[in-house]
Length: 229
Image (tube, rainbow, N blue to C red):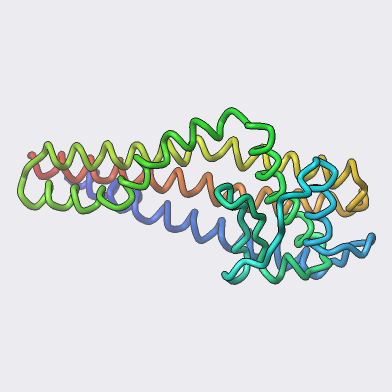
């Protein structure tokens, strides 16, 4: 029982610590390279527009997102690149790197990148799991109806699968971003390592999110086994 309790605590503490570390690392790198103005004197919005146009995506608009810092995303439904104000108006290495990453997602959709279909097929089940998994698990544990508990765990596993499939999409978008920034000379060679650091920090948050979900699943299984004893 002692070891089970110990593992349970670790499965709570470690994911939280990793999430905090990943977020701090991302914000630190973003702030650092937000202060480094691009030698080409180009903004995030300008870099995004240039890369889109080079890939024949003149029909894809760029707009400011309504969120705060790092609220950048590509909306595949409306086919719009949304950039936070810091990135849209920023003339920094970080701004250009993040903008190029979101454009990478737009290019993926244009080229019908194979992983997108797989991710989209899993998305409805993952959304259902996000809404119902903890309710189902809680009811199962409280009432002792382990069938419900098992269904809740399966829902969490679907979420983990969705997070796993998301990783290659994010890595590929970052690789496309760095390739485009170098190919079109939007960043100087000396600025590319900074852009790479920002994008790696962002990718790390996705990895940590997956690990946190897996840790939750492991912890819940330990809890259920403890109750059965």
